[in-house]
Amino acid sequence: MIHRAYSLSSTTEAFNAECAKLRSIFSRLDYPMSVIDSAIKKFLFLNSSADKAERNNDDSSTVRISLPFKDQVAANAVRKQLRDLSHKIGPTLQPVFVSKKLGQDLRPKEIKPSIVNKQRVVYQFSCDLCDADYVGYTARHLHQRIAEHKNSAIGRHFLEAHGNNNLLRESQFTVLRKCQSKFDCLVFEMLFIKKLKPNLNIQTDSIRAKLFV
Image 1 (cartoon, rainbow, N blue to C red):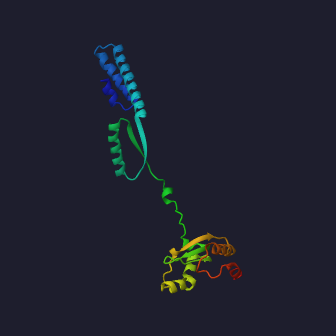
Image 2 (cartoon, rainbow, N blue to C red):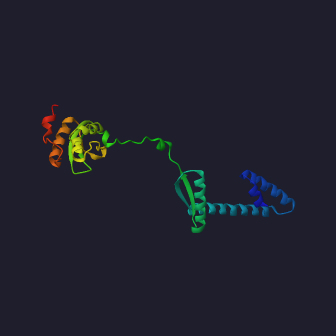
Image 3 (cartoon, rainbow, N blue to C red):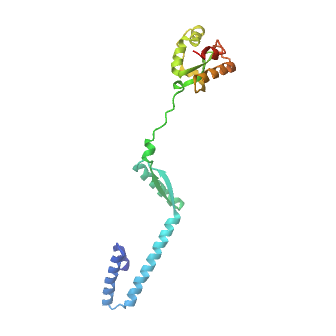
């Protein structure tokens, strides 16, 4: 009856009230008050020890696993799988689901510009049909200069060597150097021409011809 009173009581005050009723009932049945109090104290001691042991056991045998939260269906499935695994291996596996912060989802992603959108660069053209190449520079966006090469030495090369000057593509161009000014572009263009010796370039010392243009 003490156990029943404890189970039905939601607070310590309610349990004490139930114990007072039990004392009154058993005293009218001629039970010694010392026996009644001893039974209640023994129950409280055993119950307190059991609760403490259960808490310690829960803390020592529980392994918490942090997992990203996808949706409730997936979370329920994971809980069931970990519960089944816990029965097999012993320790209790408890999932702790975490979700991304809203700021992470809304964080703007950096858009890297394409090679052809770069400006103030020294570039190299390499024909993918032969070994012809060319080194040049542009202070504007590279894609603008590429379009103009249809009527330059590169366009003439495609027409004369391959019979079609519409073969020009952006993938045939590589940025060799990003520069800070037009003067830097001229200097590095000259250096790369001397180093790579591109066969479509006519003038090797371009800095003298272009510096004041």
